[in-house]
Every structure is written in C-alpha cells, then in structure tokens.
Length: 135
Picture 1 (tube, rainbow, N blue to C red):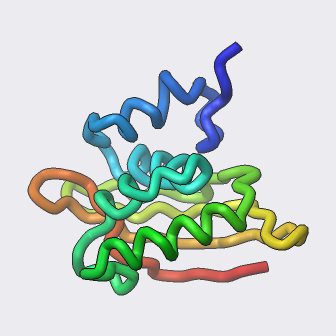
Picture 2: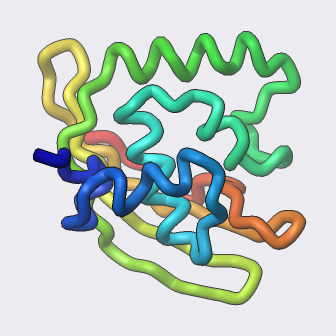
Picture 3: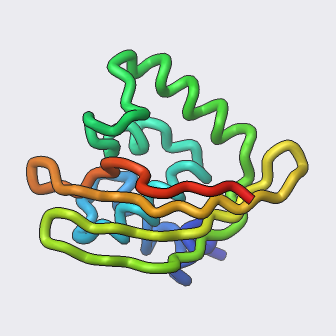
C-alpha cells in the first residue's frame, strides 16, 4: 500500500512530491509549496534549503547551521494537514495562501501563511512570507 502524500493532493507520495524531492523541477509555485510542506514532513532538509530564494530572510549562508535548525523543527513537529486557501499564479511570481495543521509539544496549532514564490534561473523558489499567523 502506497502512502498518501503529506501535501494532501490526494495522490500517493511517489506520484506527487517524491518526484520533486528527487530532482524534478516544479512547474508552478503551488507544486513547489506543496513539495516543501512534504519535505518538512519527511525531513528533507536539503530540499527545503535548495528551494529557498537566497533573498529570503530565513536564508543562512551557514547552511550546516541552517540545516540543523530546520531538522530540529521537523523532528519536533507533526505535519497533520495542508489546506490551500488561495493561489494567485503569475509567470515569474506567485502567491500561495495556506493553512498548515501542525502538532508541536502535544499541542495542535494552525499556521496561516501567505507566501511569495518567485522564479530564479527559471526555477520556482520560496521568496518570503507576506503574512503569517499562528493559532
């Protein structure tokens, strides 16, 4: 039995985000956003770093330290559900609004985020968060 993809696309992981995690390029920002969520769920730290725009405020030149921080977050978080609220698709810039249902320290949380994705060298990257709320 194949596992459903954590991104809640309705597809199995091998038919969805695994393809991107193994090197295929996302053809739209929404696919990249979903694959990043799955990467957090599966602790694919290198993928998260590779798909983050260098101008993102979270981007650290010290990738070893940054990888450790991401891994700690992944290990202390259960990724329960992803809901796409809105998607504004552009040619080189897109906005994805979503709710990530998480569990941290035995406490359920909802992360509401509006994210900006831009193309860099013809590849989608996570540029910045435009709005974020934790509930």
